[in-house]
Image 1 (cartoon, rainbow, N blue to C red):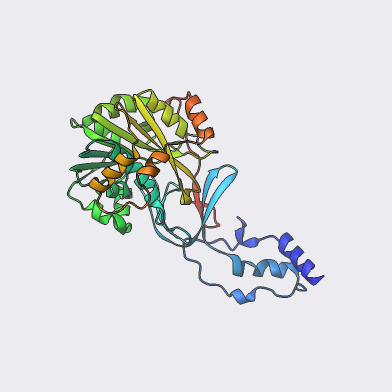
Image 2: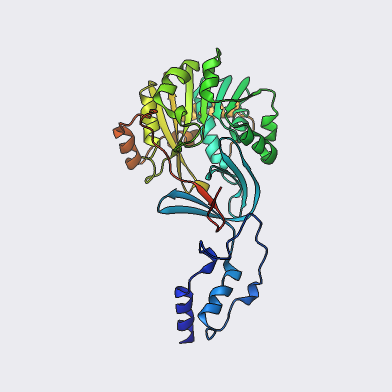
Length: 369
């Protein structure tokens, strides 16, 4: 009987530690270890006392990302390492319990220490390996530095231009993401702080590969115009060399999320380039499938044996995630995604934009990152 009463109390007593109006809300400071031994042991004690002592065991510091109005993603934190605000975005580096250091921009998780290699290898290497001999690469965005790092693994690369609109983000990542400091200091890198559209329009040179490592299109975001048909057609494509390849991150491409933006980016590029290939990979820290889109006016030949040869000949060191077979297989869509890609009619323009959802909040105070 006492066990049953105890269970009822646990189920029906409000959990004060995660109440928005609770006095137990936390701030940026790391939560110290509490007196965990004070948790009530006897079911005879009154529920109100139990209600106030339970958080001593349960309270933690959390980051929440609002994926949809009715869906949130939460990460338990060890601490907030750094925070900064630029003219364009809010930046935070969090130390999470599960994924290590996590970079958050405008409340949306950008990459996590434990699995960012999946995203960045997938973004960079298929395009460079499908090109017959890339020497020059232009990166739109990429302030984190991981995309540059992956590009510079290719022995034949002679020049990489990284154009990011936000100097504060780049300086933040150069200072705090030590894994990319060598890439930032490489003599082959030309670092530009500007809007990519403006920078490309001013340049006379062309590139073998252009990479879109941009933030997701958010309502009011700083790079939405870099996903439009007009930009692809009038600015980007003319800056590609003959047989040049463009690749962009395509936001989430899961069964429940791919229609938000992914299929629209794919369809928009189909109206600009002759050959367009979508591909996907699961990224654990995003708790979803991510999508990328390749585009070129030259055929994109996915030959597993040829890809393996090029990986061995061109890349320094070992890739953690990709090989020839996984590159080829990543282009095979499940029936749901394939049907949506084939049937998509929306073209991304300034007047008919689509946006991804979400902002992030920190701790239990519901303050926005």
